[in-house]
Length: 224
Image 1: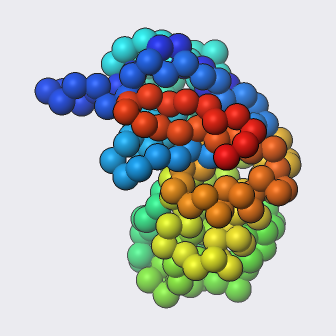
Image 2: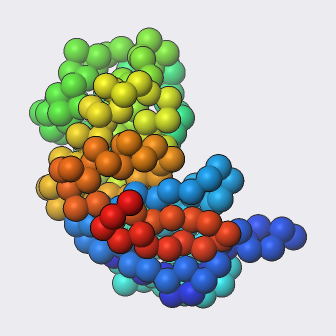
């Protein structure tokens, strides 16, 4: 699915932030990505959905060389990767259901209203379908962001500190949704600094842990 061979990334004039990364994110896998603030977790995720392209080494996504992707190729890739940001952004003048449907609208696909109802029910936001984003709580916004991320049925779901602003109970609700996605066959990669979240997940799913330190990404194996 995602393969890196000695891959790295550096911002112009600042040297390499990430370097020498060799790993595979396999279909159906569940990974956590940990590391201190500023270590490159978000940059790593951005590489995975071609928001950034590697500046060294080789990286492929679904069999395609990332650095050889055309604009259309990048657009196709992004339909196969759903992303949940730490602070998800919505169009405040549109109801929740229309915000969740935006990936379909942008890609020119019709909105199946029954499927939308089922999706909002899955994230426990059915009653909020017509609510405007400013009225939603933090937990509701994150669950809405997850619904939006999976509406195109991606193969890989990326979540960048999705529980960073949530209390423990709400974090567990969101984690359970991610685990359900993984059990349905989707690969999941969650960037987090919360070791308790990782431990809670590992009681339910065969999660592996990746650590970023000193610009390198290492696999911690099955144990923390």
